Image (cartoon, rainbow, N blue to C red; front, top):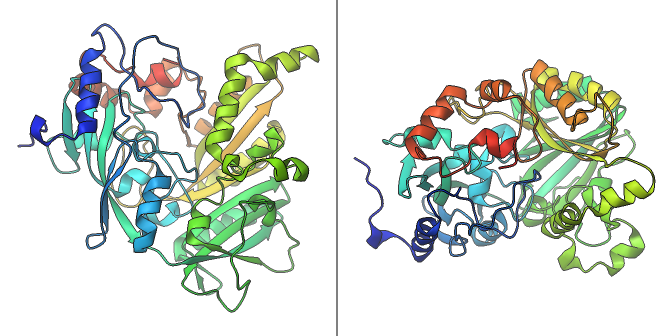
Length: 467
């Protein structure tokens, strides 16, 4: 029978974590002591010290023979990729922003352009050590006595515990990724192309290892198909592009529709192609203005810096005060990722483009990797979904006067189309609707087992009530 880890086998980072847990009064909620985050929902400030994860940020072991890695829960994908790429290996799914952590991608879900073949990051996890609400660290695998926690941990957002160590699968990767940008003039045709690529793993005789897309307008949308290669292919550029300087990746997709536009990136630069400009959101800070971009230090052109600027704005209400000077209400933040079944994706996009003044929109197809279902985010195996991402603000004061009118409308439309919404940003569900979508009785049973005293906030409280 699996036992709690003996004290003698714990790392210094785990001992620090346990000591910080023990130091938090039992009447206080437990949360992480982190200075940075990739979450976009507000949370109630607390004067209680958080969990010390400062020594749980590294790569413990990369085993090229078994193609696995043991990593700390707060290790970033940037650090993990730096350790694996020299060995010709990478995680099966590498979320698109450098400072996303392994533990964060599993407990909060992650996705990227390999997800149509490799699923979501938690599906390549072999085992996890998890700090639970009882103050113990347990090892959870799919086939041991903590298998319920293993399958319930994804999408729990720290409400059931925090991963201190994860063992994950790795896959071989080649030196370059050859890209084809395909333009579409209508969304139904684009979705049909996604279906064909996901089903066959190829397009016009060329293998497809990665697929994602961008919708600029209803009649200008693109799919980007990536193929791993060791040498630049005969068709296309012979030297890799660089989008960490003046050139901007998402603008490179745009072209007329006479033929696919081809590009080439190193595998490293492909994995982080979206990070330099936080997809396209760096434009909000002027970083895409050519004059300012030349002056903006390259080390500051990254998602973690932009997130800090957003956090600073939220803390001091800078944007709200600027809107007030114009006589406007505060703008509503609409920063969301939703999963729609492929057969409903074009319908959702048509509705969104009519109702929500946000562009561009990111598309990322996915399928669960196997037959396993995951209780807190119940997608159907062997069914193709499309992650639709949109990140901006809209004019405030619309709708029926309730806060979050646009976000509420999106939640309703996603539910009508049998979809799900990620919980990293603002949510407005009723408790009844939330339980129906995110685990319900199964989550309650996990909470009773692994956090019986409620040391961690309930998932609903975190996602909706800003706990």
